Length: 565
Image (cartoon, rainbow, N blue to C red; front, side, top):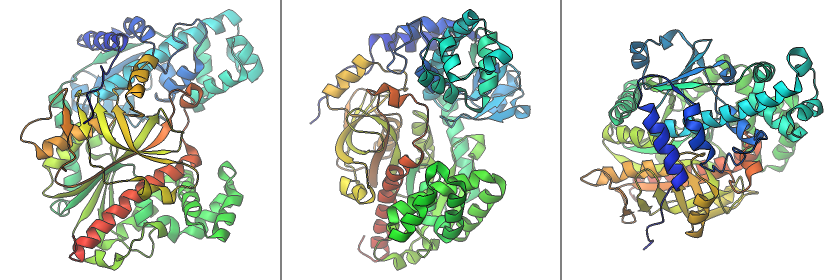
């Protein structure tokens, strides 16, 4: 049996966590400067240049990509758990503007001026946000000093090319590109703000109680139940993934509109993919063709979202797929798939398994949610499991950092150590390398791995990762541990333990699968901090994981319908 791994945080990280939680107990605003010293000396692997006088533009870009583009105008951040709670505290957020970030799905409201309201779904939102904001402020102020010293401002600053700006900031052209990536479409306003003022942010936490997190998750689940109450009494396969993979594979909108999407790719030549669609169609390569169509569909919808989202959802509804966007104003969308109504003619060819005609006899549904962040996974799954009569399968698919593989590879774990509970979970994983590898052309699938559920991307350092790497932990992610704590409670008569080895290899009462695709390589810092999505390159691993899950659900349900299950 695997022995318990060593301490899950370093002394520096422990001090940092204790510092910001103790300060946030205050009922008033807390200056981010109060966190800075603990942040600087935490030696975060994502902010290795924190103590250097030179700007760490990679860390700034990473942080800025996880904050809204209006953030250069924000001076106060208010953390709350509901509209009502924020309103009672004097922040009428129902009248504020909804804003989003590129790197996090987190509900945000901005008053158009200095105030930004952030909705927190669990302690993980705090663990994630505080280091991001601290890193942003530290690096902003370094950049401000450089620009003040250069005596450049206004139109003269904005007129500089990348080489001129690199000289003013004391960096290279690559650093300027990182800065551009971080500031995004707000580049000009953000650069002007960097030159104009020093940053001195404040944060106020209205409430961060476990009870409120649970209440919020229960409200979310009740909104999903209310959308399709007749389906929630049926047997359920629960999936935590995203809102495009299963819908594309099982709904078939892209294949039903193949000519239209191929023409769109040719006309736009998105990421130079125009010529590739004709090559893929001519070669009858199902993997490349499907990935191109799905990637093109995302851009196609973005070009005219109101009209095209409605068209896709209308098509999906005809084949038994219901999408519930942001139930109870929590930014975790849900989808319900009625297996008996799916149309195999429109499905991705790779998802079809023998006996598809038997699905018409199934009364089961798939409930798929857009994976929550960190401990929110525990609260959401606890709400789901108390609201369902029968769970036939549960499958977790997400992104992870890898210590031994490459971006785009797939990792399947049999051991998960959870930093939140201190538990090490031993699993019987229903998914294996040969379930995923047939759908991969470039990446590698590694099974029998060991995963570490971390509190936050920033709350780890090189020595911390080295200790776990020596223990064989190669997958670093944020949701598996909380999910497993909730799963343990579906079978055990008490709440999950703390600091124990929990053996789930005898089963949990339903089929269970866990799979991650690599989006980060922390030891390769340049790659991990470029603040960009996997783009088309990431389609292969994402859809290979989703295919493994979808095919397993369909096979299990066909066996049941055929009397073999």
